[in-house]
Amino acid sequence: MKQITLLGEILVDLIGDQNLNFSPVSGGSIFNTASSLAKLEACTSFISQIGDDFWGKYLLDNMSQIGIDVSYLSITKDFKTPLAFAIIDSNGNASYDFYKSKFNLNIENNNFDNTGIFHFGSFFSILEENQQIINNIFNVSKKNDFLISYDPNYRKNFPQSLTKNLINNFKNSSIIKTSFEDLNNIFGANNIKECFTFLKDFNPILAIVTDGKNGAFASINGNDFIKSDCFDVKIVDTIGAGDNFSSGILFFLYKNNIFTKNDLKDINNDSLYKMLSFGNTIAGECLKIKGASIDKQRLLEVKTSTF
Image (cartoon, rainbow, N blue to C red):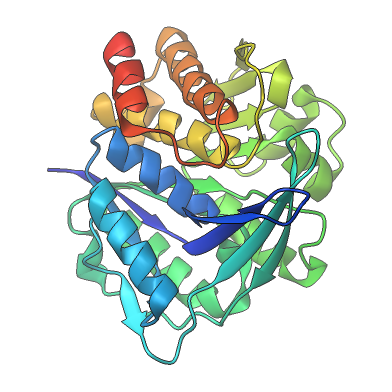
């Protein structure tokens, strides 16, 4: 059975209100995507590193309960499980303060034998110490013919010196899912049309740009982009909305057995619209709750109503 394999950071999000009352939840941009994929009952494998400590055991238990395959999770005594303190403002937006250790992962090529889609992104994806691993995965994907999906989740405070790694990730990805904010920060894009102009230079098969309340946009093979409107929901906070959008996109591909470049190239605009709509639906469910972890039963209800 083909699976979705994800690589990224998993950490403990300590989410606090303005009175500094904190509640721990499992977090990390790519982990949030993996979590919803597993709850949607996609075969999901997550590659990361945690410490052999209290918070590492907390995360491991959480992943096991969700149903994520942790066979390739590195658990080491000399690594402290990362923590992120998130403070929510009155508009539901979060600001973060991170406490992290340096990753030291060892990934074998046979970790990807059953992979149909590989997904990665965020700050983890451009750190210098992770580039050898990521480039090796690019080479394995060419041999095994699985799809590479990338979500840069780029922030203004990312060091400019790491931009070369960001560009390398763009060039090697079949699927680029990004946001208008990302592309404004990276390239100075001023509108959605400019976003797709910039992305076209990297020749992805599927390019997706999200723009918050303005909806989501996508293009196949560099053709004209289409739009799917977002859903009007009462926003509790915005944590993980983009990550959950990604899970909707990836699950749509998984459910329709789209695991190769040729499969991806054959998607028509009708399927493209349905994919965007499903991504928006999952993101909307995330916006209704505190944090990024959507209840499994609710996700299954959404899945049943769509597929």
